[in-house]
Length: 192
Image 1 (cartoon, rainbow, N blue to C red):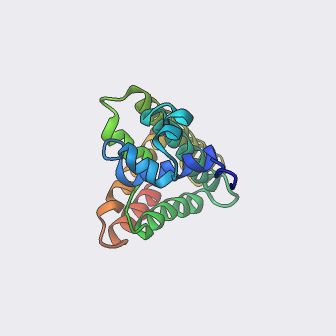
Image 2 (image 1 turned 45 degrees about the horizontal axis):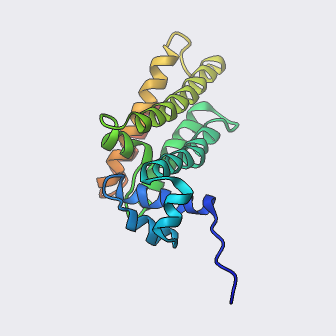
Image 3 (image 1 turned 135 degrees about the horizontal axis):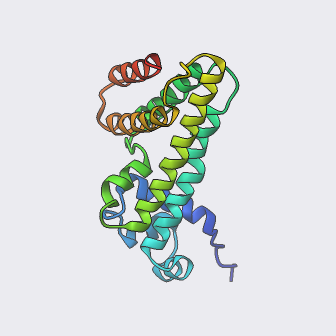
């Protein structure tokens, strides 16, 4: 008799993240998760407790992989406005290239669960706070280098940039092409 297949909880969270990201929380069934993870329901519940606990882990995994990638792009070397434009274009192009047009899992979770799921809302809020903080730091750097007027409110601009990202990610889900998204990106960077 062969050894039983080893269960990798980290890989399972990655797979679950993909399912939740594509279908949303409510539309994802335990059977969807069992099928995607290749394990039995008993193993699913033994490893993660319940669907919501697995969703929390998946949302945290998304935060750790996706939102940190944006922050790293913003922290690269080079002119501030170039980095911002590059990061916004990267998000738009990534969303448009996705055949499922999933958008941003955090934005999707906020839209679906913010009023009914305090844990998910708190996770998304903290992700948004982290991203907004990275935008604020970028603006402050641009103020120090003279790329952005020093009298501008860096906190307000950071909030505006976060809101721009949320809007871009939603627009990309239904966009027929990149024209509108490119106009938003260019206008956003140009007004700074």
